[in-house]
Length: 404
Image (tube, rainbow, N blue to C red; front, side, top):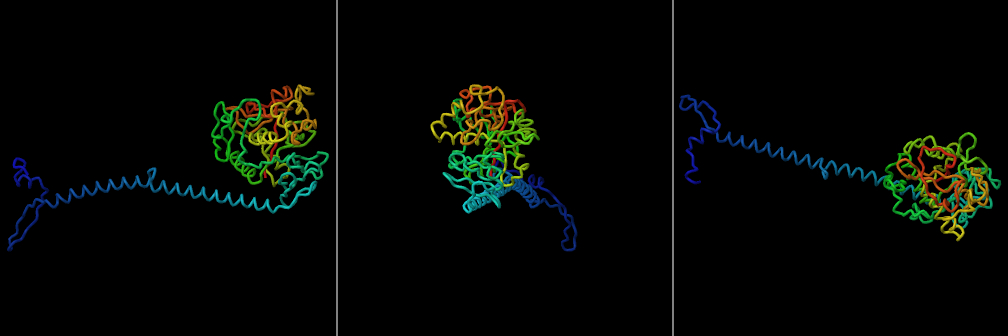
């Protein structure tokens, strides 16, 4: 230490904490004042200890609650475990369906399936749900196998549906097969965006209700494991009591809105479609309003068919109730003309537009096909349009679908 920095020891002692004690030496008592360097040292040590403890406490809190903290990582691990368990259960369920389908009994044409679903193979394989029968003469899967909830329904009295085969699930996506110039990039699954066509998928259900999110998941899973789904053979009809049916020769269910709003799915076509399975007593299927991806799968099916079927995608003249055919500028009853069938499905083109679950913009839902007051070239079966979800007009109806 330099000399000019040294201080007399007395000055240092005076700055130290002091305390007084009584000493007794040889019988003599006296008060002695001590300057405690030890006490001073202990005080500094305590302060340092407190500071260290505070630092450690801060580090501990950060370790517990930070982005990579113990608690955060524990919660993340818990969530990942729960997700893995759900995925594992879904895989087990899928395997169970695969095994069950592999061991299903073969359906007999014309007979109502009882005691569970059946399967049927002819140029492909279809699952026949309990409570339905294959319509005699319409049992070729590649051409459109038809089922009915009436046995031997050659007179088309029952609710009828057509099996849409989906052999390659990777192709189960929306697409524009027509002449509207819609790019694949215009079909989005993340959230509704202006100028884009949105529809949820199992991996992205933002922007839809919890009921629709669950429905989407179950529908996609069913299509994947069963390799297909059912679409109404006819546009939805009104049974006279405002219940939706998929029958021939009834008034088309038009003048009906999609729902009360974009997010309120009651009061319109969505609700009517979802109620069909319950009101009809069909417990082995789930009924829904047709999704955009399902409509496009039917179009893809046609695109793999004959050159005539492929041509219908861009020009549906002669395949629906249009003004350039024999239209009276009014909707016809369901299944009014046998020429208006594609794969045994009536009126995919013309008659009335059909609501779908697809979103067109912030206020509107997508409607498909053409209608009676337009032509088959300008509005073929692939046509996409948009209309406010709470509109009920005479030229818009809907169609049912079923998944297993």
